[in-house]
Length: 366
Ligand SMILES: *Cc1c(COP(=O)(O)O)cnc(C)c1O
Image (tube, rainbow, N blue to C red; front, top):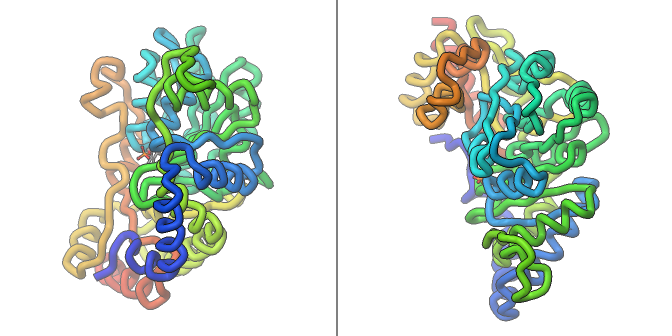
């Protein structure tokens, strides 16, 4: 049995530190926006190279609060990828704006920056690039285009904690970066958690208010906000894991490169492409194959976890049926039909990688 991620094994490796940190926080009883939340925000901002980090309840809220703080509202259009988790587009819909899906690059699975300009209308207010599976979007041409058309850029970094584009971390490039600490993410807690980063002090202040009932001073509410705070106990866990994020991401890259070296030699399999413009942190290891369904079946039979991220692009989801009627995005549709994600986590051993490879070899060379 090989799982997609091994949270149990990972916990064992720093159990003492987590357990004692949680016990100390229980004794302190400062459960809402307590000292660990504040320390984590500071440490995360430092690691990511940003001025401000504002934690919140989950990654979906991070996107929602960022979209709202950026002033995006009803009637506006926001360009994003159709090949992502639905939360990216939900955040746009929450404020009454319309997601406009632009097709992806067939190699990186990220927004095809060359196709963005044709989708810009007088109503377009922002672009939300998603650094999918841990590979940064090609941000230099995207930022140039955004500047030229006066569009805001909000990065969806839910899958890219620790990924870099050039010498900058993802989330330090656009107006804001949105993170998720869902347990299986590269930096995950033991429940839900999220964070927005920005170098804009005004935006940071608005975000701090939005996550806490629109309030700067207790019981003084300047705007209508939300209850969206990171839990103190989750912050304890995140601080322990943030110290090890470089090691975690290096482990993911090591396993990914072992997969890719072998898969490149096999027929009917395309290993994921690294564009070399920064650091891919392999939140997922996703191959393409016309024989995807046969590989999926063989891995299941061998008790090796695998998953299809994502089987239905967002423009084909029922939830967007009215705004996307007749929309055709052929690259996303083809990738959705051929993609398969393999187990990938920092502790994945060479022997486990080889075991997965043997099963795939048995299918494609058979
Ligand atoms: C996980 C994820 C989110 C949402 O994060 P949650 O913490 O689960 O709300 C948003 N966007 C992408 C690309 C994700 O992978």
